[in-house]
Structure formats: structure tokens, C-alpha cells
Amino acid sequence: MDARDVNILVVDREEDLRYALAFRLRSVGYRVYEASDDKTARTQFERHLIHLVVLDAFTAEQEALALAEHFRSAQPETQILILVPFDAVPTRERAAEIGIAEVMVKPVSARQLMTTIAGALRKRFPEGAFPGQPAILIVDDEEDVRFMLAFRLRYAGYSVAEAKDGAQALSMIHQTKYDVVILDVMMPRMDGFEVLRRLQTVDEHPAVIFLTAVTQLEDRVRGLELGAVDYVAKPFDLEEVVARVGVALREKTRLEGANAASLEDPLTLLGNRRAFTHALEKEISRAIRFERRAALIAIDADGLKRINDAAGHEAGDRYLRAISAAIRATCRRVDSAFRVGGDEFAVVLTESDRAAAERFCSRFAEALAERPLAEGISVSASCGIAVFPEDGRCQATLIEAADRMLYASKRKRV
Image 1 (cartoon, rainbow, N blue to C red):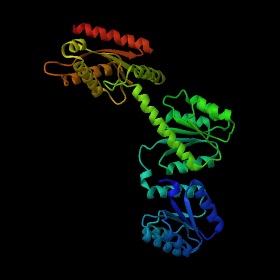
Image 2 (image 1 turned 30 degrees about the horizontal axis):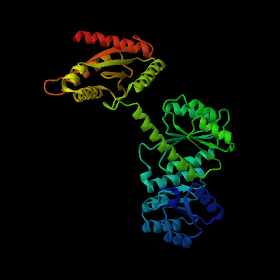
Image 3 (image 1 turned 45 degrees about the vertical axis):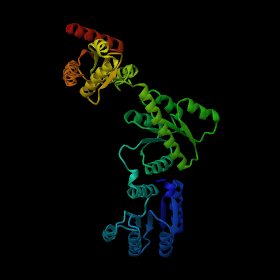
Image 4 (image 1 turned 90 degrees about the vertical axis):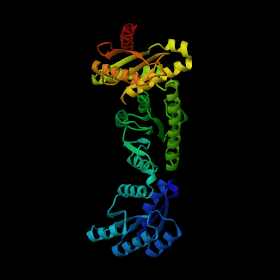
């Protein structure tokens, strides 16, 4: 649900306080109604479908509780927050009986109140709170800007984190995968341009939306050339930011789908040679960084030419798919499998030594034996193992070592 579809009723006899809260809520995008007394509050409540009520108890807590009970009986799904001058157990007990979402003791900071309101609305509209929602990182040195954006985006159903400067943002991005980064341009020590430049070295880096008060065309162009997908000018409209985040996510999903297709072998649905090159390089870098081992297994389909000649290429395709299915069944979730040539496959084993690689080959042979192609035709393949770092410290030497072991294994089968 859009914020503009949410109706909030603010009941407070103090005009300044009522105005301040209503102004802040409207700035986030909510539709806000105001009342200074019980009669006006009841009229507003009956006239509009109110989703949440913020009710100041003034000095008459019992009257406020009675009004809240009236609201709850009329619309049980309405969320109600009551502000009280002091904490009292009887008040909280009565509020719990009525079903009031929160009792807050004054004075209450604007941030605390807005956060509580957001939480109550998420209870009212639970469809916005689901696991696996897109992750957004807001990077801005102004706390109020971060708060407003985070508040609105969380209500839109996103998982939101905040960073106060570029260094903190880069650290968080290296530890957590974010889908979109909303990045302020003008920040002390490290500006948004430098953050974006450093992001280009991050694998699967997020989509970046620049947040800027800079109006010069050359600065906007510079940001887009560095890889930003969009920019929003300050002062901004929160609904526009939410819309632009949605567009950025849809485009990111489309590009990732296209990229995945370009890295996939269409016959076996394993990764292709291009994906293999990238994955092996990444695994070697990981092994060097954490001083761990990694294993490469080269696999060759035995007798593919004979099957193609005897039964046709369709049978040969089924043969290759059977081998890929056996590879997939043997891999752990952290391992990666690829078809790198006509009858050639490769598997990259994360944090694995030679013994682990040999166990993989043994389980793979068992999986192949369970997948006969047809009557009288068994599926078989040869394997060669190379382990980082003892067999090679770079892609070329590891691949060469694995191929050498593969050819030795095939000679034994002849």
C-alpha cells in the first residue's frame, strides 16, 4: 500500500504539537486528519477510514482510553497509539485489554514516535513485512535525511540500513549484499563520486541512485558515467524516491536475468566457460585472502562421439544432460559446476583439499551409475583433480594440472 493511501488521525488539544506531528507525517506522504477534542475526533473517525490514531491523553487518561475503546469497537483493525504524561500500571493494563498498539510516556522524541508509528502500520499492513525483501543502503551525512528515507522505505517493504559517510558505506557493502544504494554526493572526507568509483571493484555491486543538491549538468553526467543508474535532486519528494528505487530494482533484476542467461550453457543449464573463468578466479582470490585451499575438477564425458555416431546427436545430448545431472547431485551448495566445452565439464570446490576432491569424484561416479542412458548404454566420465596452491597458484596452472590428471585418468580407462 502507498503511504498516500494511509489515513492517520492525530488527536491533541495542543495546536503546536498537533501541527508539528501532522506536518512530519504529511512530509512522509501520509494523509493526516486532525482533531482537538473528542467530538471532532469521533466525527473524523466516522467520516474517514482511519488506519492509525495518535491520541494524546491530555490530563484525562480515562477519557482518552474510552475514546480509544470506541475507535477499536468501531474498527478493530485500527492501530492506536496513546501518549500519556506519566507511566502507570493501571493505564497500561487497561490499554492492553482494549488492544492499543502502544502506550508512550511523554516527552517522546519525534524519531521515537515516527518509528513506533511505522511499526504499528506494519502490523496493520503485514503484507509489507516479508522475509527476503530487497535491501537498501542509505548513505548521507545528514541524520534527518537518513531517517526520513529509511522510515518511508521500510514502510514500503524494504530492508533498510544506514551509513553516515562513504567509509562506513564501503565497509558495510563489503560485508552485506545490498540491492540499491541511495548515495549522497556531497559528504565530508569521501564524496559520493569516490564511493561510486570504489564500488566498481565490488563483485555484483548494487544499483546506485545519487542523492544530490548539486544542480550542475556536468556533475549529474559524471555520476551517471561512473555507473549510477539514477539521481534525485534535493529537496526531494519521498514518493519519487520510492518510485525510483522500484525502477532501479526492476532494471537490476532484468539485467541480472540477462547476465545469468549469458553465463549459462543452454543444454545442461550449468555455467558456461565464461562463468567458469570468473568463478575460478574468484575462488583463487578467496583462497589467497583467507589462506585456504580450493580444488578444481576437470571432467570429460567418455565415449560421446561413439554415442553420437551410433544413436544420433539427440542421444548425445541426453548423455551430456545425464552427466550434468550427476554433477549437480554431487555438488554442495557452495560449489560451482560448468560445461566448458563439447564434452568437457569443470567443478570448482570451495575450501576443499585433495581428499575432499577425491570424495567428490567417488560420489560422482556413484551418481553416474544411477543414471543409465538407455538399455545397454551406461554413462561414464573421467576426472582430473588439481588443488590450490600445491598444483598451481593461478588459473592457467591449475587448469593445466587438472587437464594433465584428466588425461592420465582417461589413459587408464583405455
